[in-house]
Image (cartoon, rainbow, N blue to C red):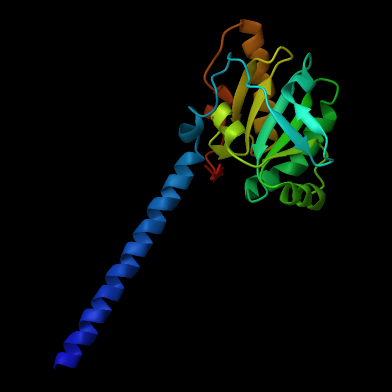
Amino acid sequence: MSGVWLVSYIVLWAVVLAQGGIIFILLRQLGVIYLGSAQGVAGDGLAVGTSAPDFAVTNVAGEPVTLASFAGRPLLLIFGSPTCAPCKELIPDLNIFAAERRAELGVLFLSHGEADATRHMADEHRIAVPVAHHPNDSIANAYQARVTPFAFLIDGEGVIRAKGLANNREHLEMLVRSANDSEATGAGHNGTSAEAAAEVPVETVRR
């Protein structure tokens, strides 16, 4: 009889642990979904109307890139990473978008990760826009970017004019429209494009 009770005890604990694991996975998934939702990212990123922090990074060709490099011209700054699936899905739309608006603004895909991983991603997915890497969280922290792909539209004077998720072509167009509205009214807003973004999961930037 003691053997039966021992087996029952082990089975009971196995069931409890399995249920605990399922609950943990569900809660984690809900957290990821929230981080990638419009509500979850509306407060992400520096406020529209504030000055964009300067940065100094290296592109995939080994050349230095800074925010000042784009002075006098609007910049679409996109935070991504080699492990971010939505970032890779964005690339075809981003290539077309950047080509069509080449005369209007510059684009920089800022990848969180090591140089080799960033270079491999750029080659494998044929990213047609400039790509640079930042190996730690300092720039993401400065911009308060928690999720990827997350983008900022910075005007030629270094002021953030729009921000939000950048999962597809529609989101990129929203950023441009929001930036134009911001400049036209002369008033900042807290991420109209983020609030209008589709509620899809995105990767959280590693801290």
